[in-house]
Each structure stands twice: as C-alpha cells, then as structure tokens.
Length: 433
Image 1 (cartoon, helix red, strand yellow):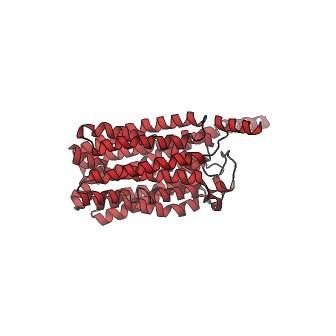
Image 2 (cartoon, rainbow, N blue to C red):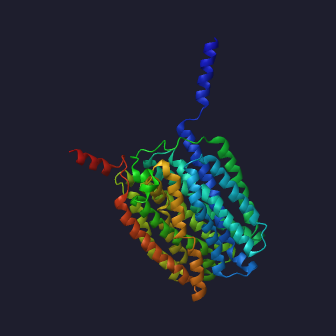
Image 3 (cartoon, helix red, strand yellow):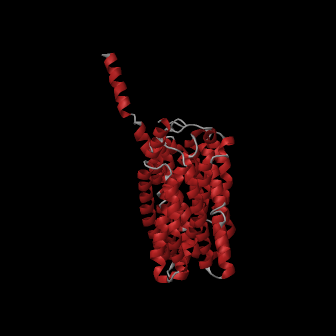
C-alpha cells in the first residue's frame, strides 16, 4: 500500500510538472509581455514631445538629445551586461533590469526641468540594456536555430505594438492630463510581469537547444572577431536602426508640422500606423522567413536586404511628397521596415553559440546604437534646425537604408548552414557523392 501510494504521488508530481515545451512557451509569453512594456516606456516620450518642448522651451536638437542620451547609456552598459550574462544566471538579471527601467519611468512623472528629464531618460537605457541582451539569449536556449526566427518574430512584435501604445498614451493622455501622466501609468505593469517571470520560469541549461557546430568563431571571443555572419548582420542592423530610430523620434512631430495634426491626432495616427504595420510586417516577415529558411539558408539576410531596398522610395514619398501621400507612404514604408524584425534578430542569435551569445548580443547592441539611433535623432534634429526643414533632416535616413541593404546582400553569403534547410541538405548530399 505504501509503495503504491509513493508511485501514485510520483506520477501526480510528474503530471503536474510542466513539460519543456510548456516552460518554453511560458517563458516566451512573459518575456514578450515584458518587452511590450519595455517599448511602451521608450515611446511615450516621442508621443508627448511637442508638449515637453513647449514646457521646457527646447529646440529639435535638444529633444533629439534625449533619445541620444538614452541610447548612449544603453550601449555603454551593454558590454558589461553581456559579460555578466555569459557567466551568471540570466533570470535575476532580467528581473533587475525590468525593475530599474520601471522605476525610472515612474520617476519621470516627477521631473520639472529638461536636465532632470535628460538624466532620467539616460537611466532607463541602463535598465533596458540588460533586458534586451538577456531575453533573446535565454529564448535561444529554449528553441533550436531553425525555430528562432519564428520565436523572435513573436518576441519582437512588441516593438511596433509597444511603440504604438506609447505614442497613443503619450498623445492622448498627454494632451488631456499633462505629459507626465502617461509615464506614471506605464510604470507598474513591468514590475508585475517581472515578478511573474521570477516565480514561474526556470532557466534552461545554457546552449541546450543549439544544433550547429560549435566552431571557434562561434564560441570564442578571439574567433568571434572573424565571424562575417555576425558582423554583416550587425552593421546592416545598425544602418536600419539609424533610420528607424530617427524616424520614430520625429514622426509624431512631422505629422503635427506638415500634416496639420494636433498632438493627440498625431499620436493616434502614428500609433495606429505603427501598430498595424508592426503586426502585419513582423508576422509576414516571420512567416516568409520560416518557410524560405527551410529552402534557403540565406533567407533571413535576403528578406532584410530586399525589404529595406524597397522601403527607400516609400519613405522618400512620405518625407518629400505631398500631404495627400503622407499617411499611405508612411504606412507602406513602415510595413516594409518591419518585415525584417524577426529575421534580422534571428541572424544575430544564430551567428554565435551559447558560450558567447550574451556577449555577442551586447556587442551587437553597442554597435547598432553607436552607429545608429544613439546619434541619428540628434543629427536629424540638428539638420532640421540648420536648414529650417524637418524634411531634409529626415531625408538622411534614406542613405542609411541603402547602405543597410548593400551590407545584408553581402552578408547573405556568410549565413550559417542550418541542418534543416533543403539547400544545405542538397549541398551535403552533393559533397558525399
């Protein structure tokens, strides 16, 4: 009887214990929710930007500096956080980062000077740097290379959705209740989700899902310097980040100045376009990437290169075209830019193995923000002030998109050979025969 009871108890415990797939799914869900509020917190500021300018009497260059300060601290913190992520458990580091950025967002509602706002926005960058490095590295330990485009497409769909909600909260709540209110409301959810992640998710063994060969340039810092798959993806992403960071910072202001919109209407329009485009673009890009990757191991690089190339004329029409083209051109340009959301991030994660993955993601973040949106809002604002035209300032982004496309077309030659890709299997078969 006692032995039978022990067996029944053991079976009950096993049945209640979540499977590996359930744990992975829960981790993806909670990390995606955290990433959503990560980007909501980040994009409230552009939504209230005209109101902040009015209160603090600052120009476009100074507003661009707020975003630049965020990304400078973000990229400076990245190398240290990457080193920590490859040596210590990532779950507590993720929770700490979420708590830090949520606290900084809350304290924004109390600032009453431009300098205080600048300091607060810089602190948010430190908290978000930890999460943005550890979360994709942790997800890579739950899912193999062939599935990471799909998984990261889900995870990064929160970029457009979070940006859209941030724009909407900033524009609508800011106009009716003052620009501090949306920061106050955005702060709490991140704390609650971080607590749920801490209590409900067990961290997997590092590298548990990796299937690719652990070569020197994928597993060591010394060899990592000679990893063209990583560097071309990173430099291409940097040029994409330059464009997207600059456009996202000034798009609501562009609608106010050249579209004749109110602050609230600009926030609603920008948020709606970003949400729809982000959802459609990320889903479509992830779907194309998932199907194409099974046939061509270069697919993720090629999707990104092609989408950025086609986005150039659409963005040009939005920036320099007549007012009647503003909304449809912005819609098309954003859709094309979001197509590479999942594929390009999967390129980065798949280009390295688990022992250096957090460090590689940290270096990627340092480079893409150092060459991208750490200074593009400031540069665009400066060009706008000097030329008295925000159109000319935003026009700089077209050049960066062209460079990104060229780099990624080149980088497709170095895409890792995934075992599940048909072209890889065909090449292996040809080599055997």
